Length: 279
Image 1 (cartoon, rainbow, N blue to C red):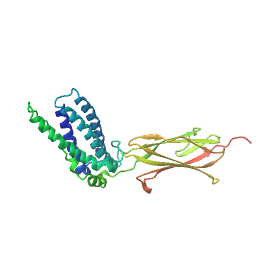
Image 2 (image 1 turned 60 degrees about the vertical axis):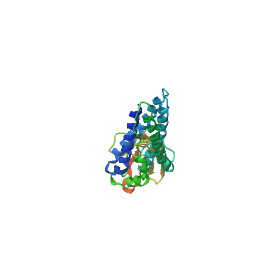
Image 3 (image 1 turned 120 degrees about the horizontal axis):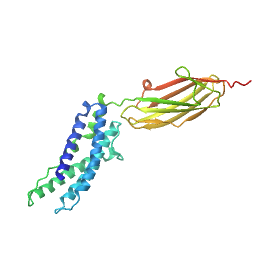
Image 4 (image 1 turned 45 degrees about the vertical axis):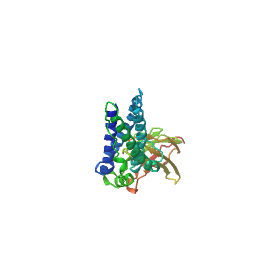
């Protein structure tokens, strides 16, 4: 079990070093997938380290390796979180990864060196058992500079793709041409908007709905939300005041970060509320 765990950790170290130095050749979805898989690997190491602690051996090298593995899980999680934060991707949940990055890299170097001494002591003991050393390729890299290089890569540039996936109006409109809302006589029009994030980026968005009557009266409502990668969200419904016979427009606009004027997503509906039909 120790040999398998050491092999996994060294393969992870090599993969992380390759991602940091050559990640700009990847597409954004591919890099995001690697971050997700590597984060999952770290959680599995915690389980393996727990199993490694029992039974306690003499000398207690299994406990030493288990504790070192848990420490390195936290260190690697900090590095991954820094990468994810720099590229606006989802990664391990680590508080202040930019502050803790240096300490995490130093810890990776220290645990690798400490394990080197322990494994040599084991090799000189009866049975001459030899376990693999821990590599530290990624710990010796300039991670801050590497992430800055990745963030500037055109392949990995964050692109925005927020769409209005559904619009629900109550009372339900009558059949009408596209982008036309034809309502029965009513004093309230309730509107609910659902949006979808089509990219592997955490996307803060702002939803603005504006109801403008031909009389010049305007009603505006604005809501904000951060959408997780590849997720959807339905905003709370909002009730607009209308009167029978009213005409106007309803505009729905999405905006977010990163965004520019060319990336706004909006729809404008023509609104017509039927007259009451009474004198």
